[in-house]
Amino acid sequence: MSLAEHVFELRRRLAVALLAIALGTIVGFWWYDHAVGVVPSLGALLTGPYCSLPVGARLDLGPGGQGCRLLAIGPFDQFLLRLKVAATAGAVVAAPIWLTQLWGFVVPGLRPVERRTARWFIGTGSLLFVLGAVLAYLVVAEALNFLLTVGSEVQVTALGGDAYFSLVLSLVVVFGASFLTPLVVVALNRVSVLSYARLAHWRRGIIVGLFAFAGIATPGGDPISMSALALTLCVLVEIAIQVCRVHDRRLARSAARAALTTPEPVRASELP
Image 1 (cartoon, one colour):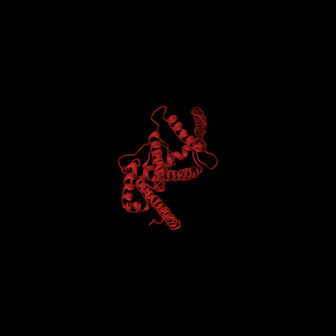
Image 2: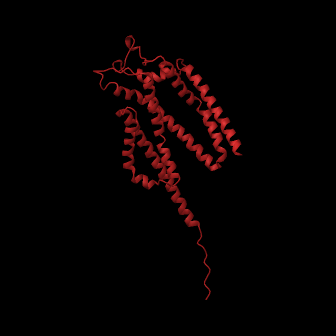
């Protein structure tokens, strides 16, 4: 395939991906205040962790704790928040399409072994990112409960929609990306950069580093989200270390069998 054909193929696949995201954004814009069967609206999903807080921990604008809404202080705040949420949902909903386009552009240049490896890493990485995002969403309420009640005797927090969405999105991205750490460890082991022996020797330092990373990476710096991220990463990295252990043992056994089955070279006898 010539360079011009590569450029045309890239442009075509990029157009399909962008069109899918645009259509997903339109669906997300409608979904923002409409429930789909048993699936709540995007607005309800967004405000769920915030509205689950005690009434005294948030600004309530209605009787009996039924007035849980985010604050908008500008004329465009409501529209911009809805657009941001819709665009994020559109990118997620359209992910199978734009990932397929990306894979279709890359895969012709890969060998069969590389295709299988890439497929495994992409599938595992996607699953780990989703698990991290789900954990982040579950942690948001506890993190907010700490942050919004630490001085509730003196203040009450009226969260703006943009600030709240930025916090939730940051937690989701940080948790999702952090959950890819064990996959990176396994990948480095597969290319012989990190051995199990080295990882086992560094285990204590890795644990300290994960806690330090969680303290720096989590927005807000609350101990709830920091501990949840750090402890989960420790478990996942330990699983990755054990996977590296199995891989290194398998390589050692293969090398031992190869050494036993390889015949020694026959040397010619020296002439007198």
